[in-house]
Amino acid sequence: MTNFVEERLATDLKTIQQRITSLRDEHNNSNTIEANSEGADSNEPSLSKEIQVQINENMEKLLDNENDVSMLLMVAQLLQAADVQKAKSRDTEKLLLERNDWLVEELAETQSRLQESERLNGQLEEEVKHLRFLDTTKSIRCDIQSSTLADETSRPLAIDTLQELGFGPEDDENDINHNLRDGQPNCVNTNPSPSRLVTLNTLVIQYMKDGRYDIAGPLGKQALEDLINVHGRNHPDVATMMNLLAMVYRDQQKYKEAAQYLEDALAIRESCFGENHQTTAANLNNLAIVLGKRGKFKEAEPLCRRALKIRETVLGEDHVEVARQLTNLGLLCLNMGKYEEVEACHKKALNIYESKLGTDDPNTIKTKNNLASIYLKLGKYDEAETLYKQILTRAHEKQFGTSKYDSKPIWKIAEEREEKKQKGVLDTSLESPVSVPYLESEHYMSALTKLSALYRKQGEFEAADFLENVAVRTKTPDEGSRVDSHSLTTSSNEDSRVRVANTGIRSKLLSALGFNI
Image: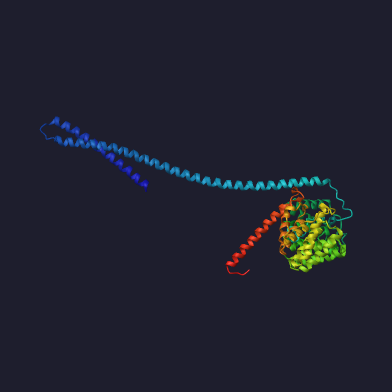
């Protein structure tokens, strides 16, 4: 519409300009005729001078307007040229926008290809590292003349740690050196495994230790396929690799997949070794561990009991592996609230550990702690207190010996202070520094803190405060093995005052609210 108006205006301006030009020509002709007529015939009337002047003035105005019209016409032409240029600019802008959209899409596609290339490059680098590692293992010669792959590589498969049952770090045994000693299976396809399979198995274990489950998993599956192709599915080496893959999935918290591999491995080992073989017991224990991780304690309990029965039959009732299985069974029962059975399991395990490993072995100390904890749940405070005192006494004797007449275990000093406090004769200014062992084991520290809590539960607040302050001040060996009794007393007295003050405020508040205390 705007272009039409501009074109119409330009046309009108041109028409007006033409008419003005025509009038100017007519005016010039009229002036010429008028001049000629004056010289030819003086008798004829002529236009009055006034009219002639008026005509000349009008003509001058028209000529001035002609210049304005010319200017307007020029402006109209410029506007038309500007409109044309604007249209061209719009077309160019549209073309540039379309090209920009194309460039953005091209950039996104290029970035996607770059990311994919980087991912493939990373995979290729890992494969190169893997191939280099394989190249370095060519010189390894594995002795497999008298044992199968299950004998060579089953060491990391039965990790009988208490924490694997789903319990806290306090129960973690960190025992990953429990070896399975497989006998020769009475099943088909018992030929020795190729060295390549042994190498793959070793690689899977190494990558598991390094936490590279993204590599350990595919390698394990490849080794499992190769084993099935070489020996068939019903072979102990296949069961061993299934156990290893189960551990890979277990460490990634994929317990459902781990349980499936362990169930398949259990069926193979029962077929090859029988239902009462040590490897079958190890498989049962591993399956119980995974079920415990999933919270299926009722399903895990019969498996754990069956593994215990096998190990008692094969190894004897006083074997260390039997003690470990008893501990696992006890912890399963603990999660189901069977405290009496937990007590029985820990007692048997403690007797085995003390007879086979000694009183200073970490397994013995930990089992004492576990047994004392179950005593607390059963309300047997005296039995729990006795065990905690045994642990702390042994820690003191290990560091300071038993020859010093003035050297007393920390719990005995705490009880003496409690007795003096009750009699009102406790004077810390006359006391000498107390010999406190550095509790390097978490089990010793656990016994100290739990005994303190037991004292507090029984109303022996001075003894409880004293042990709590000892625990705080003996966490690092740099602080020395002798602690100033006065500093301990001052801190414990301050704690007692705070406790009494809080109790008084609480009593007053409850009384004000109308409660009788």
